Length: 503
Image (cartoon, rainbow, N blue to C red; front, top):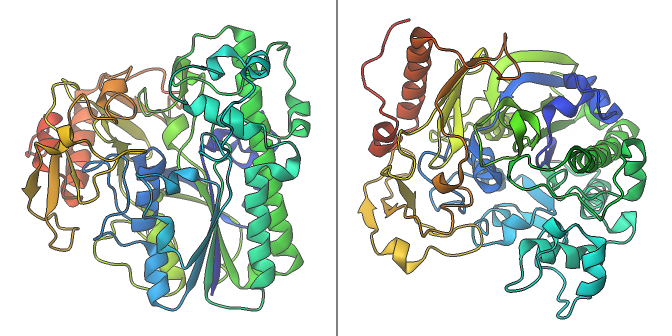
């Protein structure tokens, strides 16, 4: 058995032709759809980047207990499980969050790994005295804030000085290294290759030729990194930001095409599984917002693409089963006939029916639920005053350790049913936490509980006022939270009752 798992970051489902997109030609995603099972109701679990990857690797939801953080000692990671069964797993990625404090235990679960430098704010090039005068003229002021500590924006600008030709782009190198692995191991068996690129995540930086089809009237400096928040830019600036995203999607489509060429040339469809997906989507002005993390979890963010080719059951099809990111790990294990650990919540996409409903969210924000017809987004009544704790044995944030101020209030909590009898640190969330105003409860610009019928209102423009349906979705949410062994305060903060209302 052989498997290729391709993971993009921030790839919008609604941009792809096979999902009805028309703005960006995506012939290779369409070509992929013609050879695979295409999932029409696939959703995220925990967000954003590393919480999503923890779900993907472990097959269970984590956002009810933990924000951004490493894999824990009790976590079941599918690459590590494969390793114990004699299956070689190889990760090729430019996703630099794997090498930060909040992600440093992920890549080590693979048998081997290859890291391509230079994406976004990867601390790559040590240019001590950058030519700021020249760079100020080159970049929009919103993307170049010089002075004080080095920011993520200036780090990216420095990296970009060393990405001059198309071959230098990290995503191009990632797919190139993935193809190198396939060439080196063409006659071997029992391996999994994960090709993972940060693209089309912001900043939206692609080789110049990919911008040719998306020219705008913009005559200003480089503008390809939107803020996280409400759209305040003038139309021409907003158009330029979107056009740069389109260009990176076009790049991703071409890179996918190179992999599909490899499958065609060497008839890999016969004996190699292929899974292609993303971690989440990205708002490009829909609902008057850019990006993620700050707003309600709209369909553009949470309803994501998924393509699966199983050589044991080949052929193109559209699946209407409800699935989510936690299903990837048990599916990969199922390809090798490996029974998933009892702690995995996900279901193999190669077997049986999907979920009746799924929940998803950011730690500290709303808990959201969908059954594929309705979506319900339930916020705490008091985001800043809510009682909430992080449960961990690995107390790190994205780029820092938990502070002594956070840890001084920590206590030891008894095990959950998924921690293999291991107790955890129970750390109170405080406003001075590094995560609080970045990807926690302090950064939200929307906090109204809403119910939508996405079959009648796919744009989520008209919230429903229907107490019976809301009670029904609340029940489903509560049941899944119980099955996830959510901590007691998770129910209290959302004012969820134990009695199940009828519909």
